[in-house]
Length: 100
Image (cartoon, rainbow, N blue to C red):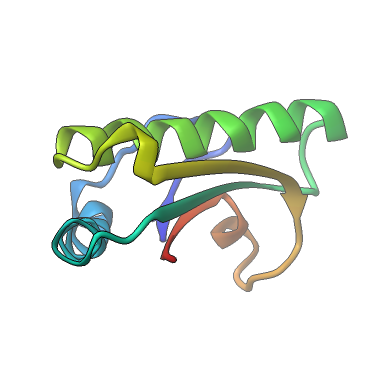
């Protein structure tokens, strides 16, 4: 997971990208695809805005994966909108990467 500040799609912690880099290397070595899903918290903002923000977060991580050498055709992005899945609550402001 890559975590974001409130109302932001800018990656602030390069450390968050270390695990993403590991997944990128696995995907490249094994010819796998990656699915990046962006999320926003559902306690702030409106539903439509949270969907757009979650899409921007997924796109931000996708841009980093492209820099890591993953082919654009091997990356799918999803904007999941506002969620309330994790505790503490700010952890819902994230993007996840899954190898398929």
